[in-house]
Length: 251
Ligand SMILES: Cc1cc2nc3c(=O)[nH]c(=O)nc-3n(C[C@H](O)[C@H](O)[C@H](O)COP(=O)(O)OP(=O)(O)OC[C@H]3O[C@@H](n4cnc5c(N)ncnc54)[C@H](O)[C@@H]3O)c2cc1C
Ligand code: FES
Image (cartoon, rainbow, N blue to C red; front, side):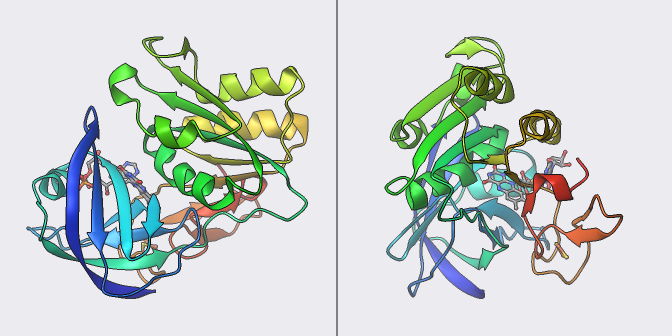
């Protein structure tokens, strides 16, 4: 992990309220899917903003971000040529065992973005089914990437794109129809992960979830990001995660 200076190559809108920013780095960086970067957006913001690494192509790294508050508002205004500090790669990332051939991706909200990096890393060697939930048609993004999966089920909260259901419901329906994966990798809002955890426990399917706690340092020093573990201990999402075995975390 290192604090790189990234030069923005492009920063453009890809869906309603969602942007993709690509930085050129000064050197090659090796990343694993599910890892993240901590971007110094400047302004009055002392704290950096953690964003999942969506793509790493050569020396160019792309992050997709939803506009939430001041930090992402500032980032949205930055054009090509702007130089920012980006700490990366951070966190453990997703890891798939060799004997796990069939992967199910279950994602919603900003949790969609780290799952794109899984497709890029494992798409050629594993059989991937993606169950992705969007708020509505305007929020749909990543279709080109997820379309490369063996199976891609896009659903929306309001039924304006795909069926009206959530990603966990779409996943459970497929499992009930006999499409059982060897492992599930997921990222999304906590209620979604909680429902998924209950579903996979019932079916006895291994499941790894990426958590999105609020963060400070991003490197394990400030303890802003702790989460509760089922063994009564606590873990730092930035350093011990953000990916955890679903059975080990309290959701
Ligand atoms: C490991 C990790 C990976 C992430 N990856 C992505 C990504 O790929 N794309 C993306 O759009 N976002 C991602 N996020 C969330 C992102 O960090 C926050 O949305 C961002 O920091 C908000 O900054 P802001 O200054 O715009 O908003 P703020 O002013 O800081 O906050 C605005 C609102 O968003 C809420 N908020 C802020 N951070 C979080 C958070 N981590 N979880 C839930 N609510 C939050 C605040 O409570 C507040 O209500 C990730 C977070 C983590 C921890
Ligand atoms: S953000 Fe500082 S310890 Fe995790």
